[in-house]
Image (cartoon, rainbow, N blue to C red):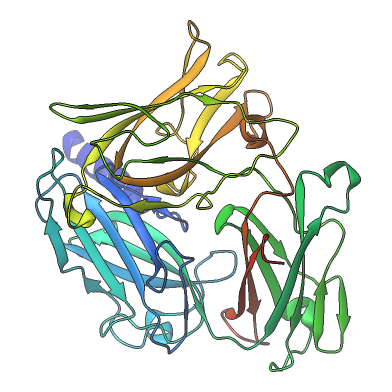
Length: 419
């Protein structure tokens, strides 16, 4: 009897653990790598599509376990804060509630064997019929408790116009380091009863949810125009251009590659990284944190790009007694966890780590977390400068009086170098 009770206790503990879903970009299985999710009009673009249009999103990822899994996917409508909307799937889906991923291929001529999966939607099976925030869920064997990954995306029904600009911070102490975003929203096409409560706007830096500011009220209202220019809001640290490395070829060294070893596995040692928190800005091209799967030595990087053990080292002028260093980028969803945490070599006074990455071009940066404050600090290793090139996404949400969900009625992309 005790054994039976123990079995059911363990079963329910496991089931409740599996059922937990984070409404953010997450990977739940360790063998799932190289997740790409974007509007097919441009590789690695922000995942926003227009409602009832020909826009298509692509999801692609590798399963290092190999073989074939029975994978399903569905989408869930959410509000602007990424809480599930009070809607049933039949209210926001035009067709079926889920579908199976049937497009998969096995790797070819690679040390690391993997299965590459892809799906594009909206398609005949999955069609959203309402605008707003959505969470894409991929799971095993038709069981939503066996989650593989989740990804956020946005469906736009454009009903407002947005004009935006970037300028130095209003705070004199931050004018050389911060970028202040001011914007106006013209809602003339909407029947708005109270613009202070019915409309809110979200500003993202480089599409990052960890660098987002929600505007719940405008600073001023002029007729049907909402003005967001409060001196204390939408003031972002400019950061620095992302560091990068190029693994498109394993036959020759790129500008950041120190050595390449190819025997029973691929290993790359990158040149050491310095602390870039300097007094002056130094320009370099970057991809705003993105990564691109590419292989110059093959024909199809989706299945013939190989995986590589990439070794990083950082002279951060800090040590592990004071805190911890992390390496982040779009490739790991900018997550600060044990996988992105770096080790400290006291003999060399450097932080180091190795990551298992697919061939391509990668942006990355280092984050410091002080052991006392526990606050992520991007500036400690990278610095922050007003001149840094960044993308800002502005999304406008509207909740009609009495409605049970928020519509996404406006979107614009602002680049700091195109003013």
